[in-house]
Length: 240
Ligand SMILES: NC(=O)c1ccc[n+]([C@@H]2O[C@H](COP(=O)([O-])OP(=O)(O)OC[C@H]3O[C@@H](n4cnc5c(N)ncnc54)[C@H](OP(=O)(O)O)[C@@H]3O)[C@@H](O)[C@H]2O)c1
Image 1: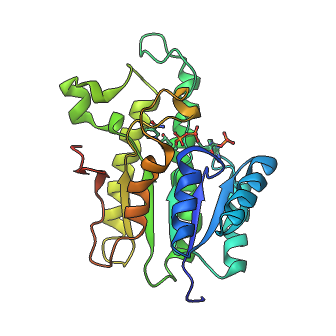
Image 2: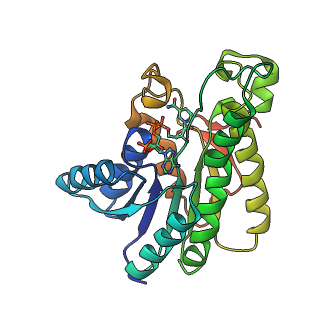
Image 3: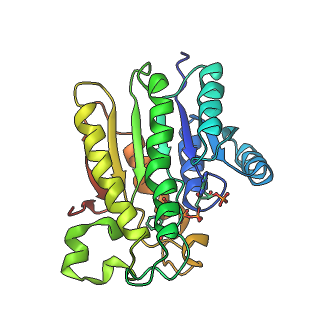
């Protein structure tokens, strides 16, 4: 492996993922733009390169085994991977109130937001294990906080049997990874970007994608003695 740090950001063709790629690229890192659509991916790679980022395209649908396997091969052929940012996510169709939700919607959201993260992480782990300072960042949300949900604060978003629980599930799975990887040098953490204006919420958020990317960039660049198995936003730890 070369001395240059290489990162992969899933769902990097727009929104927060694009800005995470731009931010990591600004550090001088080589950044893989993971995206499922060829046109959107190449447009983002071009835009990042125009901004001076050493960006390259990684065809990637997190719900597709063959696509994820091919992405790991591509990164292996390029020399490896140091940092994985599992950013790709969907909210799923409405309605999501538990009394009326279509179970297929829950399945689809979990397939992307949870199983997609497991699929990508496990495919990339052999590469990450060879890195001197591997980091994994899983993009969660405060809507996944059971503490905040049960306190019924306004940080919890609309009533949801799919999106919000998918982030609680992701949080729970990430803790299990941190426990299993506890005796390795891999740090794995959850980040919440805040309420960000993107396609995901019809651009209703009040933060910019650049602001939303900050926590992921912070967790991607943790020092070797940094935390693992944590759940953070820009203000520090979030209550589980
Ligand atoms: N925006 C917020 O306020 C907010 C708050 C808390 C947490 N988050 C989390 O932050 C992350 C990024 O969200 P965002 O707001 O930037 O949303 P976004 O603008 O909708 O971007 C989502 C990205 O994920 C990609 N994606 C979706 N399904 C995929 C799949 N199967 N394979 C590969 N890529 C896939 C999308 O690709 P396509 O363009 O191909 O659809 C897109 O690049 C998500 O995990 C979200 O849950 C966002």
